[in-house]
Length: 410
Image 1 (cartoon, rainbow, N blue to C red):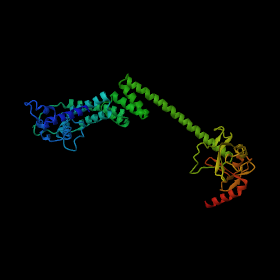
Image 2: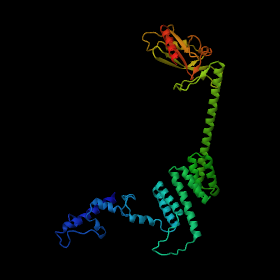
Image 3: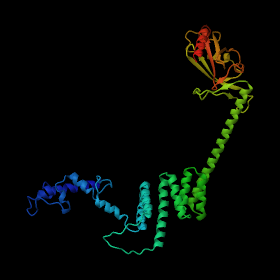
Image 4: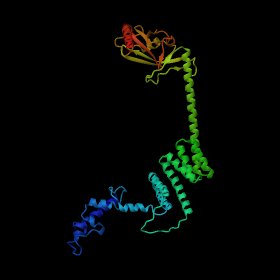
């Protein structure tokens, strides 16, 4: 921002000198030796009739003053293209080394990993570029190059750039790309400890524990006392133990769940209580059939029971209705109902009904245990939930007729 302001000030000063409205031009009346108007430098004569905005745009096309490589307005910028071409002058190793150093500076000084990664990529691309053709205007050139030494230099730069780009990818959480760069570096030099370390770190982040262990152990073969690698190995081993314990706990939990489910099935079968599941079970996660002892089929079974009051569109829910309990046991504390303004619901004024397997209705004895009702062979527990309709006696006929009517339409 400071540079932009200083450039704007420079432009304003130039305009004052040009049109004689201020600055030195104002002193012309006092000092006749100073001309009233000072011409622009020869390189800017073509812009003497331009506005300050146009002059600023022209300056911004000059590489020295550019704030962005995109500030070209889609036009060819010869100076900029020439500057870019300079980056590729020299041998492949020299060009790659230049890009590598720029990437390293970004990492060391500013931790700008995305930009640094781009420079390492440019360095690697430069090593793959074919040599530039000679300039015909310069004539044939004879350059003596030790090809073997140059190849070694290129190989070393490639290895370093791959390992450094792996670091950038690791910091950016691009773990797959990090592993790919490490693998390429290790093909060049299997003893590169940094490549083993960064590969191990990426595998650990992905919970690829066997691969992370292999990377750590492989690196320690070449540097047994490398502190960073030994620290990483401890982290990997700790994560391995944690995951193993979690997996063991999960397996035990699943095995316990399977045992409990099998025990419950056995308990219901031995009691002659059929069950059925539908495609649309009610969203009631708390509604579960349960044994007092989940792994003992002979222990008492409790059922979730929903009490329906169809005449008044009301319900009550009993989470744990024990098999040896009766409807009277529960209705006795449910009644009186808070919404029963006409006092229609009491033990002696209501009838209880349950739907049969065939789709009919049976009158459920209020004093019978739930086990006797469910094991009669006429009822079934649907989606783990027992349903009982409670109807005032004087409305029972209407309820039954309505039920038959609805069933007849299905």
